[in-house]
Length: 344
Image (cartoon, rainbow, N blue to C red; front, side, top):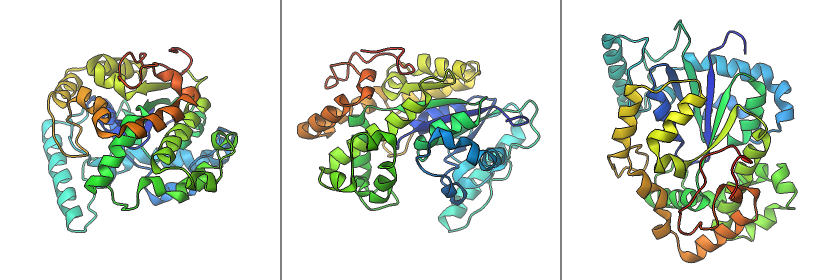
C-alpha cells in the first residue's frame, strides 16, 4: 500500500454500533471518515464472502478502490452527520463544508445527487487516517486485512440478542429501504452457505427454510462473525471490540481503540463521546443514545422463547467465549479482546 494514507477498517453487522464507533473516530482531527463506501455498484464485483487466499487475485482492484476513498465526495459517503472540525480545515472551510453537506442532503430529498464540496481529502500533508466504516463487508474483513498489510481493523461485535432485537425493531418501524424481512434474505443466505463456517455444519438452503425466522437471524450472526474472527484471529492488526464494552465504558474503550489505530486522545473526541452518551434521541439511526439502555434493551423487547433459541445457537459456536455464562443478565462480560486473549 505504498504511497497510500493509513487505513482503518471498522466492520460489523447491521445494528452493531458501527456508526457510533465510526463517528467517534471521525471526531478525531486527523481522520478522514468514509461512511459505507462499499454500498456502491463498483464493489459488487468483489465476492461478498471471499477467502483471504483470494486477496492476490483482487489486489489491484482493491488498491484502486481504497485509493479513491479520500477523493469521494458523494453525500452518502461524505455527509454523515455530525460534521467535525479537522486539522487541515480553517474555520471558514469548515463552515463552507457544513453548508455543502446541508445542500447535498436537501438535494437528495429532491432526487438530486449533489457532491459535497470540500469533503475531498486531496493533498493533505501528513495524510490523515482513512476510516472505512461498513456493515456490508464483514465477510470481506479477512481478505482486506491480508490485502493491506499496513491497515488496522476493528471488528465490532454486538451480542446476538441485542443485534437481532434492533433489526426486528427497525423492521417494525419501517426504517429499512428493503421491505422484505431480514430473515428472508435468501440471496444473501445462498452466498453465506458457501463459507467454510456453513459447510462444516452441513447447512443447505432447505435447512435454513425450515428454521424459525429468529433462528435464521441468529445463524447469520454466527456465520458472518465466525468468518471474520477465524480469518483474522492470528493478526495483531485486527481486534474484536464488543459493543457492550463500548457502551459500559465509552471513554475508556474509545481511548483504547484510538491508541490501537495509532491516534491520540483529544478534546473534540472527548466532547463527542460525552455528548453522544448523555443525550437520548429517539430516531432509529441516531448516534446519541443512552449506551447502557441501548445495550440492554433486548431483555425487554425479545420474547423469552426467542432469547432461548438465540442463546442455544450462540452456545454452539466458538464465539460463545466472548460472553459469560450469564448471558441472560447481560452482566459480567469479558473486556474487548482479540479472540483467544480472554475467555470466560
